[in-house]
Amino acid sequence: MSTLSGRTVLVIIGGGVAAYKALELVRELKRRGAGVNAILTAAGAQFVTPLAVSALAGSPVHRELFDLDQEARMGHIEFSRAADLVVVAPATANLMAKMASGLADDLATTTLLATDKPVLIAPAMNVRMWLHEATQGNLATLKGRGIAVIGPDDGDMACGEYGPGRLAEPRAIADAVEAALAPAGDLPLKGRKVLITAGPTHEPIDPVRYIANRSSGRQGYALAEAARDLGARTVLVSGPVSLAVPPGIEVLPVETAAEMLQAVSAELPADIAIFAAAVADWRVAGSHGHKLKKDATGTPPELRLAANPDILKTVGHLKEGRPGLVVGFAAETDAVIGHARAKLAAKGADLMVANDVSAATGIMGGMRNRVHLVTADGVEDWPDLDKREVAARLMRHLAALIAQETAP
Image (cartoon, rainbow, N blue to C red):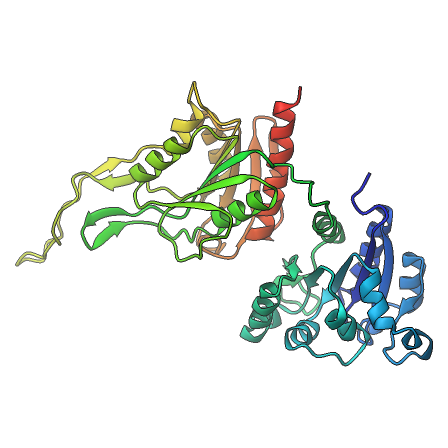
């Protein structure tokens, strides 16, 4: 049975071409057993009709704040109380700005200001509007107030541009609604230990210089938060990053690959180990204790490199204390799937998360990711997603796998 059975979802439909997808969202929520009420904004009604929304929701669509019948019963308060969750799809730049500012000049925004229920927004707009600092500032404000966000996805726009701004797919929004309304006790990783590595390593050349890479650590940190949210005891072994320490997670800061291996080994056993860190393959053999100086000729010093320990391979081939699931990340610039398949076997992993980090993708160090799950059984391709959404989907997938592994 779906967690939406017997629950009520209030869908607020904003104005934009993507409003047509809200009809499919309403259908999907109903299919999963939810009761659906709908508010159609004036702008939304320019793209979809009240009749279509009402027919799919199975209830009258609401449009006006100053409706004599509804407001005699304080309709905007009633709507906010009757729903278990409010979802705004599409959440336009205008709607997000109003929400962030606390404006309440129509039925939709008044209801949003009056509700004390969880709110999920699914943004959709032109890519330049989405990337504008005003929109990003409003997004940060809304997230800071606990409003959940799904999307937007990358893709072709109605305006002819390409990039982030497409409304998330209706099934993905319904999945997010279902996850938000899952019972508090529905924590599939409760009692499990999840060990995650994140960020780069810094391999010293001398006291002021080091070998490193462009990893931001965002994907690993997002995975740690997703594991925590599913009930896991989460240990995050982190290389040097500029990210805030997530609450409820044990963070072990390290600098070098050797230190990361030592920290990982000390935290075993674990139910799931995810190696998302971009560990430097080499270090300087015998780093210098003082800052290297230029000589009179300006000839650069010769640096002799030595191989760093392969942390994923070390853990993947353990005979005792090996985690129930070993997951590696394969960041490649070419032959992404081929290299990931080779690493899967060589490193003893159960699953490789492969992605293309060539310069053209802009993924390395960025906010989004496009991954492929590579296992012995085949390859599963995922669309371009926000790294938090990648993390949430991956942790749910791993939770299901570890449950199968340990089922009697």
